[in-house]
Length: 138
Image (cartoon, rainbow, N blue to C red; front, side, top):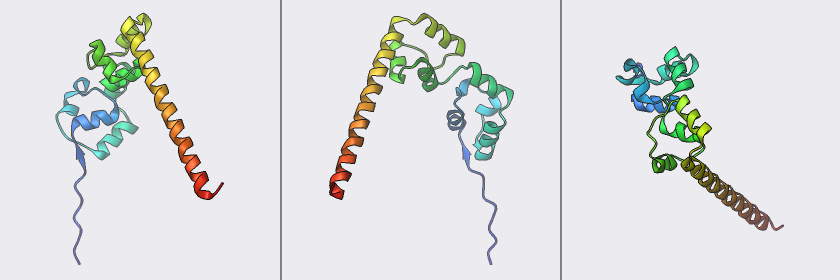
């Protein structure tokens, strides 16, 4: 009978782990950035975050997707506005308080796109429901 060997833990690149944690990798400590992270280590960071992770999640700098979400715009909107990849919570709050013209335009555009996506989803759901009704003979 063959004896199974212990499995090697699955490892991920620091960028992947940072994305899963929702943090901006260059702002993380050097020991986090420089080596692979196991799934067990990632889970430990999620369930028992160290102070540096708590601080990053609270005040940033934040990765691009989180900056966009906090501003209520798309990632493309950040690019069009020339906004850098990472902003801190204070910088985001300043944009929201000041509401420059580009931010107002991008928020309106993003809201219109989301409304259209919701309309299309509702239309597709109705089409599927109608197809199901006709298939059942109603």
